[in-house]
Image (cartoon, rainbow, N blue to C red; front, side):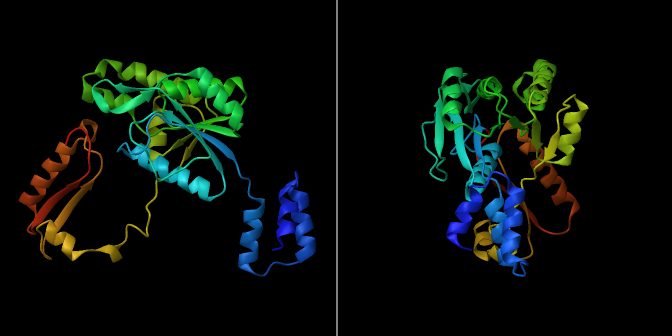
Length: 291
């Protein structure tokens, strides 16, 4: 496709007329590659402000899945403003178009995680400079609340993500009395957004069950099938684990923290050893405060 034609089409404000113009020129697109080029050409590129209180090199599922999301959005041509707390270490796997860093504070009883200070003026100025099409709030803490207020003040659409059932986690930190207040706050928070992204249908049903009424969209985490594939099976790795070809490996990969209930996996492994005729071995891969 001609570069000058692509530039002209991108400048069109009304995409339907651009489609008509294109098809008049080409009459018929029989080549799949040409169709793909057309779709890529007219696909909107957005300016997205992503607000999060966790980010690599912190080790948790939210931070790592968010990193992949940002990399994928940027690869699709979208521009990212990343709003997050300051960190001592730096993530070198993603470079946003703009970044807004706020002061941070460690979470009580969970020193490996932190929350961002509600620096409203700083966040508001970052939105004014970047002019996002949408603000996506990943975490519902003080920084997320501040970002919601700043976005609404500027009439910017707000979406949110529900990643961690904090109302359930509270019982692991002697905070069971906060289950209902946390649940009530989460309902209020997400009901004040245009849409909330959830990782599964089960999560969607759970949120509906305790009162979240805003539109919910399931955005699965997916698996990188190039990285996680049977073709990478390694006998040398199994030897490092001390297992032979006849041994079945029970593998846990994840964060090692109280709310993950890793002890349940250990108990399940013990039960499997008593029930199965095959040799089994438990391998735990991860990091976290319980290590």
